[in-house]
Length: 274
Image 1 (cartoon, rainbow, N blue to C red):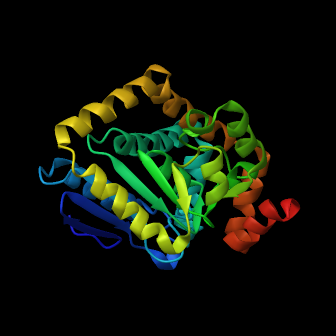
Image 2 (tube, rainbow, N blue to C red):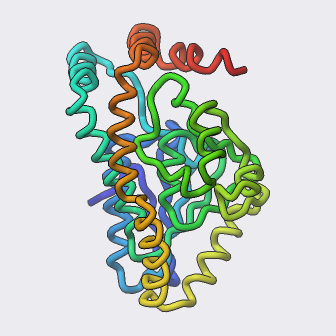
């Protein structure tokens, strides 16, 4: 597969993968997702690669799933029909959950270096990586819980425990990279200017260990999380998101987005919290 929205640079045992849709803050379009999964599996199958790094080009790591309103009446009708049919909605969201789980299940460790906006789907992506280093001033959270649905995947409780997970889910608030490090959501935070070096230093350290040992030691931690129900939780998360899409506030958000544009819908969602 050729890549329009991914940069792939393998060398010295490290596969450096970059989300490369900076004009859209690396929003996760269907094409970007397909390219990312193809690229990550390519790295996972490469016997020369021992560790993968994941970064975002431009001003943000990833500002979420691409929720650009449909541009034609036919597209609007198709999206509305899919959302109104809860089983169809679940089916689509479970595809997203399986995509994220496929990253979690890679045999090789993935280090996410996050900066700028790490919002909604951006957090889904980062939290399915094995280690996260954040820029101190990164902006991390899931504001869509206010009016758009619930996360279609759920790693929050496993990362920060139930009380902080509820705080994120019940407020839609965001935290800085430094705050995320203090609560254990990320491994550590560094000044934004040092993020590249911090990710590369950790990847270089890990790349000194043979793949077989890395795969074994990653897998035991993943299996421990799955014994806690992590895998089934992703199925439940996707289904819960589909149910939440039937809420009146979500339908109102979609109406405003279709009629007035995404910016107006986001203003409706977030203005009361400023």
